[in-house]
Image 1 (cartoon, rainbow, N blue to C red):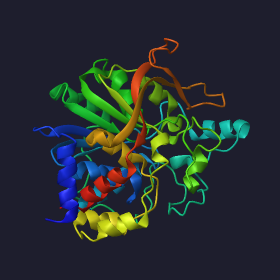
Image 2: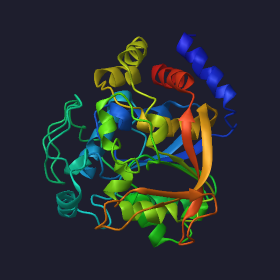
Image 3: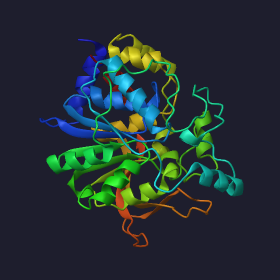
Length: 362
């Protein structure tokens, strides 16, 4: 038994995993190859006692069509093509590229605009040039084969169906903009109530600036975060819906994390399909989505949580459009905002060991 496997088993026992597999749906703006988006998906696929019912894809970091292609190709390369993938929203509910550019003309440029970005920040990350939504540029990892296709059912229809089939048993891990979940919540008033728990990567409160280029997103606008800013109306709908439990992982705890070269080197030593994929497309990012995956799968790694009433600013002409709003628990203005559990700090050394162990495991 490898040392990584021993660590993985020890952490699994420590986190008290249930006897029956946990049913999980991953909702993700799964740009790739590699990076935080795809690595977080792999953490869930690699976790013991987890059944991934499906992956729903939306636009955000990249357009939905290219995110879909990167995910299908990743599943090919790691040998997990049995996982169903569903096509979700291409555009936000109301926000648009033109509206964002007009907002910038008044309030100043945004550091990062995801699929709308035309000039990439100097972060050392390789990205395809800007392109329209239905174009999938040549993929560095190769295009998915003809047998790798999304399911015919839409992401929203899948979300509604799977929660009706397993009421109270499905956990949703949402790591991109919340457009798919907002559409499902508006189509079926009972959708949110049928979900066991929702874990969201999004929002920002008062993060401590990190010593890397990605801090440019929030350094001067501490309430700004990309996932909520891409589709603020969807984020507001989701945060106001009747989930039994919501855990929010904002930018704040992620500023203490970074996928460093030595972590990739340790994973590479495993030489499994997952380890080869991760190390082949290694890029150093803060571990945004990986931390959200840990909040769901290994909650004992979260060191500080607070319950707050949380909402999102949807004043499209205002300087705070998409910003996170918060109040003390139960002390909001009573406009539909609800209390959520917000993660503010994690045990970073143990979290890194957890990531390395899972991404190194068979």
